[in-house]
Image 1 (cartoon, one colour):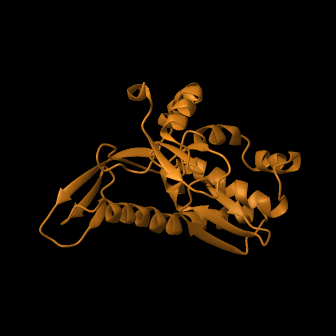
Image 2 (cartoon, rainbow, N blue to C red):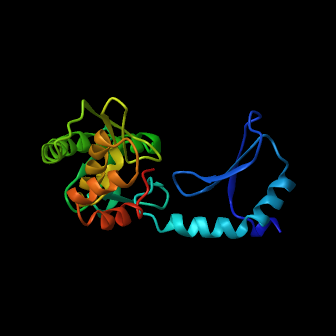
Length: 225
């Protein structure tokens, strides 16, 4: 029976009152519990097998997952998929190079955590260059001006607008197509006027980007992980 069960990682947290199923940034199954037994886990996995299969299928269809340096060697940038190559060299510096056709990680010592930091740095640097001019452009068009723009890597949100009209953008936005990035910017600017997702908010979005639903559909095919 055990051989038929999906691979999982069990995280024990005594503070939890219930057991939760979720997936990590690689799409692998996580079980968080106050400390249940292996037999209880197996029973749970059998009970939830249908949901797990459906969820994993949906996740596998997502684009832009964090690189698994053992087998997932692809990076998304501005909506395009590019191969990621690893090249070992005598130079004792790890650097990421992009030549419009592929990404290449030049390294001396194999260090996946450092590789990921270099990839994250690429997305952060390009986001900080690419996104502010677009925000300024659409802020003028919509006559909605943020007090500040910030960037950070998050696992769930593409962007947010604080009560003080400070916009925060996920650096992983740079994985998305240009028009989809524009939609996220318009979405967050609209929150300066409407701090909700009610009818007035979506009317403002539609007035600014009539085909916004197409971009929402594209956005849902990517993961911010």
